Structure formats: C-alpha cells, structure tokens
Length: 165
Image 1: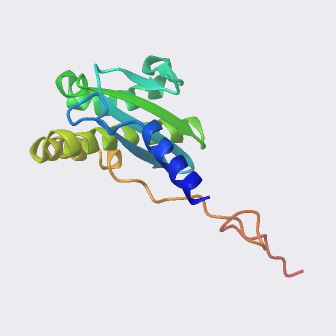
Image 2: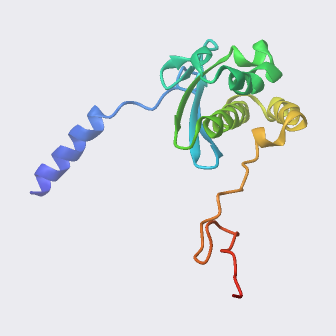
C-alpha cells in the first residue's frame, strides 16, 4: 500500500504543470469590485490591450448611457498604460447599474494590483493618485447596503399609521 501511494504521488508530480517562468505571459492578477449585491471579478494579465466582459467585447455593455462609466478607468489612465494588459471581466448579481459600478472598480483595482506586482511601486502610486483624484469609488468599495424590513411597518423605517379612535 505504501508503494502504491508513493508511486501515485510521483505520477501526480510529473503531470503537474511546471511553474511559469518570470517575465512570461503568465503574469496575472485577479481583483474584484463590489456595488450593493453585484460582484465583478477582473483578471488582468500581460497582453495587447483587450478588454472582455463575460467573453464579449466591452463595447457591447448595456445600457449605452452607463457604458462610459466602465470606460472611465481606461480613459483616465490612457492607452499607453492599458495596452500592456488584457482584462477579462466576469460580473454577477445586482441590477445593471450596480454591475456597471462593480465593473469599473474591478478594472481600476486590477490595473493597480498588476502594476504593483509586476512593474514598479512608483507607477502604481501614480495610477492610484490619478484614479483617486477623479473618483474615490474606483478604488474604495461603497459599504452601503439595503436595510431589511422590520415588523410593525411597511418598510425598514416607516411604521403603520396609529389611530386613537
């Protein structure tokens, strides 16, 4: 039995992929953004500047009016910084507005994390300052949540009308 276990462990080690070499295509970071109940996950990796949302190009985002909100972090940082990375986005939960705000936060946090991990601290600080100066919610999540309904009324705070006669 001990031989079988050791031989099984040896074959598992052979089948495991080798760790990626430094400075390769495998340089990636994963970050999330949140707004209300929407959660967006951004996978930022070394690439050619592609941005995809749930496998589709970013220009297919609906509604059209809020599409600019998703582009904001990319427009603020400029093409020179964004063309070095590919961004894959997944989003779940919430309504469309919450999802849009979660996406823009995931993009901003992902680019910052990528620059911190693989480029240098100075450029990461510069990017973070640009984004913070424009809109703090690009980096810091909004902690507000919907308050649950209580008994004795029709909503969280409103009470039923009281009658004396």
